[in-house]
Length: 546
Ligand SMILES: C[S@@+](CC[C@H](N)C(=O)[O-])C[C@H]1O[C@@H](n2cnc3c(N)ncnc32)[C@H](O)[C@@H]1O
Figure 1 (cartoon, rainbow, N blue to C red):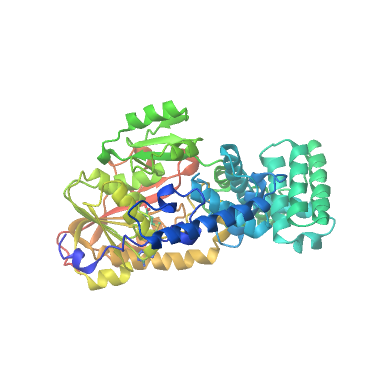
Figure 2: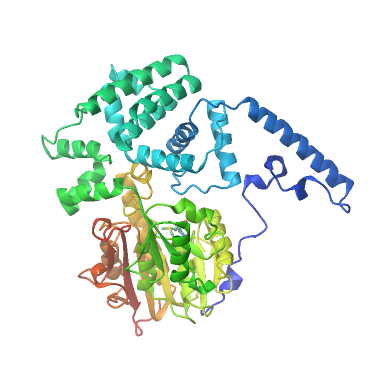
């Protein structure tokens, strides 16, 4: 790379940890004994500190026992609190719950703080149930709320409903209608949760509404809107039936037509499937992974799009627990992201700038393909996300290749004269291609966001283009399926930058993903992977470097 990124960028401090469990105060009661009891050589101070921790932990576990409620089903208590946190913006709907000692403790701490009691710890089945219930209740929120409102005696009862009560009803509705769980158990358990966490009257309300629902489901007469009236009314009905915001439905009908829009919404509402990429740089191959998945009895399918990927529909928790991710042998990565890297086509010895790199999925795949030769400069404005990238880089054995730099790309490219062989701009976007995995995203995105995102994408494209050497490659990618964030941004960029031309992606990815204009585009409905886009551009050798 021309220029000196190492002088301009410094790696984020590695000793700092944001994990609250690293503080002495919150050491888990089952902390390893070497932390609690001093060895012969340790000081009196350490001994005193350890005694304090010991009595703190004892006090904590006594308090925990006295707050333990064994009547309430753990997965419903955890799901209700998780849904509350997601709604208040305090948690990401992490569909992959890592079952570690600390994560389970944190989860139960939230339950205790919110509901005033703890339940027994979640077992593997509970964890699966929490994942299913939370994901499904968030996806189907609009549909469920329509039904709940229709079954309340007055609209006011629904409008004024306290948040926890609404979450308990959403859980019950979802379990009965979408997850087909035994109705009598669902009613009993959710009534109990409402009584214990709120008050007896709340339990009675849950009982009345859930029983009505069971009757209506039995007679196949759920109160759902009819597809009639003008375009707006039909879009509103579709938005309820398929549980999406009205603006998204209208936009997709405009770009894709009604049938395709409905197919897309069905995909977004289906259980997400995940894929795993093997880190071949660590000597771990896809055959190794397949052998291990067979041993773990995790159903899987080899990717036909990318040699390093294996698809998994269910059983990700088992993979996580087997420690494959912790050892840096694999990553959870969608095949669509892998195809973006194939469009860039990193080669050993090259210099690459990854402009919006964190948390680093594509950086790591690029690094692995470079076989220890060359450099990837990973830039991101977000310090916390970049710290994750730095930690995983080490884990994947790529710290010799990847350098991190926390910066706003727009300022960075103005201040630095470095030019590299290849530049990837994986731009911030609406994420409309990943709605099956990011259940909450559809409710957080607004139509107005698109205008702001388009402006940012243009500015970042201009900035990224300054870092490409003559004859070098610029790849622009998003995880959106919206033409205004994709083809339109490239069209407008090429008008501003005649020094760049489109380099069709033929030969880099399977033909099924190549658009008429030579771009990469994946379609969730057609390809059963996330929706994403990438354009490969080349800076002409003869234009003056601006
Ligand atoms: C789509 S994500 C990148 C995902 C990443 N490439 C991966 O594969 O894991 C977009 C990233 O752009 C970063 N970003 C947003 N504005 C930026 C800016 N002005 N300069 C640098 N990074 C920015 C965000 O912090 C975010 O991490």
